Length: 266
Image 1 (cartoon, helix red, strand yellow):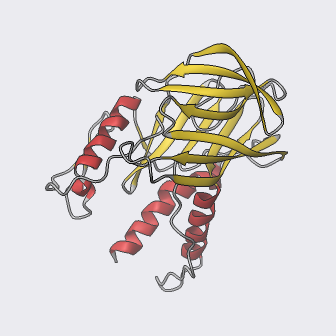
Image 2 (image 1 turned 60 degrees about the horizontal axis):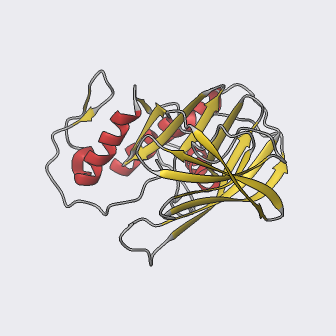
């Protein structure tokens, strides 16, 4: 019974926005591959995530995992075809490695990221870039280098190209005079690189936004994530859950073993 409730929650939280979003066509699709080390103290084990998609036009964009979209679409189809309360999901693909998304409208960049079974949405602080003199070619594309310091104190470098003069890039990394082809942090524990570019007319829609818990600031999200990492049982289905006006989730869960520390793409 608990799993069915969880499925309904996920579908409501993650897919309802796709049904009501207005049509907003993109003119370019970029596929990215992300490589990261889940434990910065163990650089022998890395994780690679393919098929991270960026759709954009002159005013808006969305960045998401194709696997996540396919996974939750199959869940949605299974629920919509249920009979007498019975849900037939068939063979689900593997749980996607990446379940977050980033939606940009005008100058506002909204990240929607999971913590446990909840999704939180918040506005990302704008990045300030320093344009550097270095140049290189990446897969035959002329690129220039830029550098930024994020609000969480990490230094990132980005190779961008004026061959595609759009202020776009993967995840929250936007705002340069050209499309970002590759971005990585100072310690090389996270890198995202474009693997394919093509024209497209797919709709740009917020992904996972509707049904998520909207937060006033990113700092609230960072606290929620830290609390969950320290105590995964904080989202126990049997505990009493309340929401404060500032969006912070509280409950009466007891302490559990701390989960593995992760390097997050902040």
